[in-house]
Image (cartoon, rainbow, N blue to C red; front, side):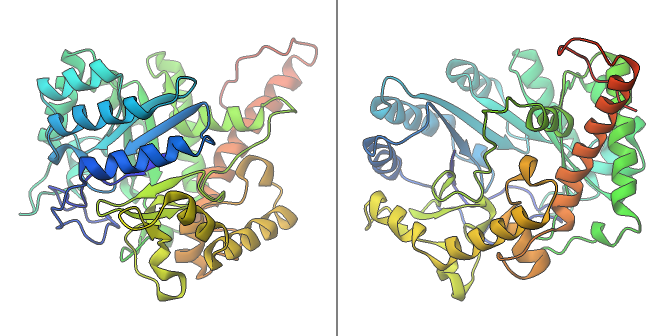
Length: 380
């Protein structure tokens, strides 16, 4: 995965945003995009599929013409056996017919941030003047649907929305949304989440997710719930298939800022300041060859401490086979150290879905112990 920051600027001001430079309107240059991919593909070590995520700011404030040129540059350098998949995470407010044409032409994956019906969404996702953004985001979703552009939504869960799985499902169904992802409001960068102060949060989230999965299956109109569907894939994978956590493997996730700075591991680290880890930056593409930057990454104190945390997780956590060592960004901001283990974030996003899926499987196995390996899980 390559996460590219086309710009640090965002046109809105969400209360839970962790980005430190969202007023910075600097835009990445096409020359820098070319330098990145010429070197990346020239290393001959990319995976069969490379996902390029345009994120870490609002990507749609940069015009479609830029991306047409950038995609063409990347395509020129792409080795024949490698597939490149582009993806955008957007607040949806700037989507129009021109954007939809680009998305369809290049088969771009589109994620729209929408926190549910207006009262839930507008509580945190506001314009810079403090107004709600729900109506404009919904206009963007309607435009995607009118142009038959596939998309998913990411909903950041608040204490209020955790109490309302039925309300969220009704909203998704009314809006024609059938691919749903949930994010827990995290403590990252300068943002400290109040959600983790919720009493019995793990049980509250368990009840929410189990109930939502049940309602979604009952409706027959929700085709993907990320938390459940990815958990199923992690748990019921072939024995020979190793699990991978690209947030803990150096250069498995390559993060590039608009000015050429290069980081790795959790993408949220890019742009944060930390003197002990050189601000999580291993070099700059404008002055350093990518191969040298990778070497620095592998020999860094950051890599050392992340590895120590992964080893500690492996020796102490029963969920390691479905997790692979957690998210470094959350270890740092919850525990104060990369060389640490469990976080509230991993308890919610990995342990809770795993437990829900295993409970469903156990019930199915008890009801039909001699059934074939092909099965359909039902929530319990």
